[in-house]
Image (tube, rainbow, N blue to C red):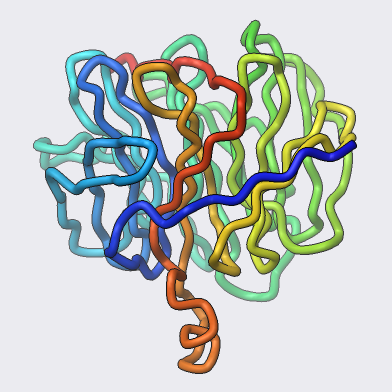
Length: 282
């Protein structure tokens, strides 16, 4: 039987394209981005409220954020991966007709980030791993590279290509990619993995988070009071507060009237815990 949960709004601020929640356990803070707003936010988390404590503004897009054990922030902008406080980009990854998108730190402390097409082209986008200044291409045939997460033992990388609606798995770091399952009702977006190894996937356009086994079995659904959830992460001292980001992008006045919590952050208690987020190693 599929478990059912309901998320609740956890703040008043609405974001155009809220994305990429990351739990920084050392400082007990949540990090997330508003891609279109060009901002990275930090805040405190409780089961009922998320309070913004700091905001970093960028000239263009802020597509993903990662953090080191010392608290240094790494941000994927439209084309570059930059270390906050440094003028020179760590890597220039952008290409014409695309932008960077979702990113995450692997169990070895390396930043992995994908790109998405800005036009109708398909199968031209990449997923890359950044190790210092060395860039390794993992995939080069994607359309909208999205959610990234690893199994509890770190041996499997889960990744999403949203436009074909495919969830992939690969033995990490050097295994061959394989299709695990597809999602046809809504677009699979960001994801996180819980301590049991199950995948929690944001379904853009359907206002829900789906918990699925690595084989694709639907185990639980979290209803979100916003049609465009983008990603989720387990946060808090016990890693038991599921934080969900959402977006207002492409929603007109009528849709926003029907779904006034669109773009806000949500929290949910889903009866399980997440995994500690690896720190980026500069």
